[in-house]
Length: 396
Image (cartoon, one colour):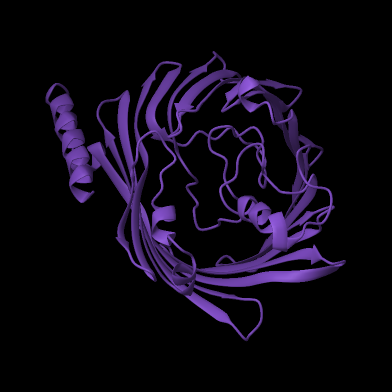
């Protein structure tokens, strides 16, 4: 795997030097940009103090950009993780699951796969970006973010992300071709993208952005896996309160005859107080969601696994209706505290997450995150589990 990455970087560097031989000579730092981070995180999981699981994660990321010319840029993003502890030992085939790549290219490797110790590497960015006047084209593994809201993004057809996965700030990438055209004036743009996954299923869609009455509006449509998708999104304000929303309607095709048409929509309000306190609240409706309590002894465990694992634009949360609220406040220029929560009506599923972070220096941050999950079982709320995460992050 390392040899493949080395070949990629060498080829990019050689191509860069060939470009520069025709232009003004540049320094290495002007041609190649390298940044990333190194994180160390300890996790404690438990329901009660009779059984405590402890896991460790060493997480490294390297981002490389090579400016091949004024118009052409190549990007590589490498993610390395060393994971060991009780959870790795308790989950069968943990390394194989972690090393599974859903993209068209298999760029994920479990370098070490033991019962309680896994070393995993993946390339989640590998693309060429070309800009000429008002046209921008990106080819390869990239992040296509069409979402506008914070917690849930039904407009995000290409890169659905999980809000609960706080340790993956970059969010997933997809193997795609994307073209963006910015209309004169900078207030409107066309965006067209197509990707194909490991199951030879494609998503291709177009999005038109424009501004009217102080609102940024986006209208999108296309094919999402086995469905036809049509969506609408907006971002603006009501007075001093931010007002955003997204809605996508998924129409089943002949390939998905057992499925029903699905509407997924969310709206969100946010407000920043003069003292720095920030509030964000959202509501989600999914017509394919559950509206009654589930039995964890039956299908419930699968439902929860999907809800907090790999999401899709059609399945952002297991309940038909859900709400989200988060608040953050800077105690000082160095300290910040926040609290986030989700609640699924009907099935009565709750998630709560307190967070405190401190900047130890310009390139070093410490964070303590808590996560607790509850669900109704036999007419009472039961604790599914607690998790505490302590993370040190050094950026370079």
